Length: 259
Image (tube, rainbow, N blue to C red):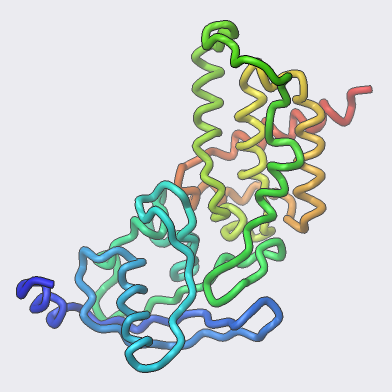
């Protein structure tokens, strides 16, 4: 660390960080307050947690468990509820892209895990989001015969359909929609994965089978139903619209009415 960085750290801000601590799925949890010093405004939210964990380790205390991977706003692993908002105060933004300049010096920040019946807590701020993988496994794919890959231009896709599919495919499966929904619904996630394939010619043969399987798996896993609050759309880091949920409902209705 350079001399300038050392001075900046000493002159950094202090925060009270109220963190959910829980040893495991079946263990009781509680919010615990910590003081963290030397926080520079341009630090990311996760870098602040790194500083806090270094501080706890030096004090002989157990570090806070939280998820992160790319730290570039791509993967969505950094799933935290910050002051009651999934991923933090900005729209179209993952937790790792939140900067400490967004919080006044000396303020108290409350950090909790994503809360849903289908997202059991593993430890502290880490939750098990494998339920989303199970929804995908139920039908979020296109079955093809084995063989050589078809030519790229053998199946033409209109621009409107391609744009709709790409918009839906932007979903990174972070689960913020579930955490923000008062019903803990996974409808935005599920509908995005359904619309992605339903918009393409390759997805048509299994369209009815797919939507029935994925919606029924979503219900089986304990996710709630959509009641059009729109909170999912508000916190989605990729700003995916709830119009995909309307598409999913139409497809499901047609699939259940089909012989």
